[in-house]
Image (cartoon, rainbow, N blue to C red):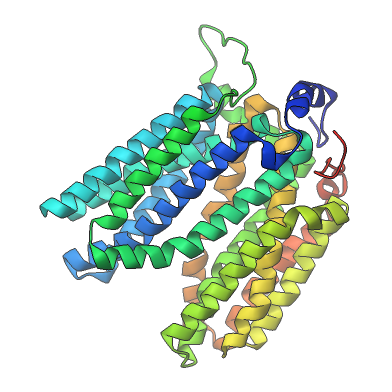
Length: 427
């Protein structure tokens, strides 16, 4: 594969295209999407409640922060093995197993809270096991989408998953605070229930979540199989460019939001208004996710990616100029609005050009590269704000986006992107 959809891939998907006239009437995809809406909502609820629980038990902000860091570290370490598992084993069974593990973990944590046995060790164990299961589940789900939708539905499917992520995060945080106030164990019990619903939805999906696989030899070259995803990414001009574009872009978004929050607080803005600014930014991403398919249809993919990157750099720079007031949230919300379109276009194209048997490993390589760099963004933002005064520190992030924009402008891998079929194309 060299960055275009092959004839074999299109032929393989032709029968399912006949069965799926519309993404909104695609029963199996909607089951998966709905189940994950509930699961993601439960995760957002518990993500807010976990540090509150640890802080209440220990009185230590550092230990409360350690819980979130531990989850991120475990998820990062598990990302590449998750891709190999998604390509090696039955994806439906793997996702059911992950949901079962997380269900048991959070049900046990809820019981421990009620029984007064929720020690830091118990909490850390649940967080670590859940983070590992989540890394496997999300990679497997990403790999499975291509088997559930037509080629002309891929971008819309990725965009709907983006909308799900923003929407559940916006709703889950206040809901988590409300449930935690009503009862300390309720957020974790709610998360456990969400995994029951997710597992039930997956059990109701009728179609296989991967294409038929050839039997592996009796003594497979395990090391070679593990490196297939990385080799495929490095050999594909588009996927190489995708990584180079995604790393600074994701780092800039994560760092800019964190830095803007601290900057607004330094300027004397109240926590309530900072919360409003954060909601404005999140709402921009949610609206952008719903608009992504329409934006993607109107421009060729290379032009779209370049336009998004350059406009995001400009909008972030404008936000820096307004960094002392709540008005800074508006251009940043517009930049976030464009983010889902970039993700839908880039990852939708990735799903189309990657063979099904490599989907998990390729996705895991890209996500590992993008998210591991973004995980360092808060630390980078804190260092810059501590050592560089005001706006010059914040300008680092629009400059990072400009790097992505330059790569998108001059990279042969982006220029070579073929047009993908869209929802408006006749199947």
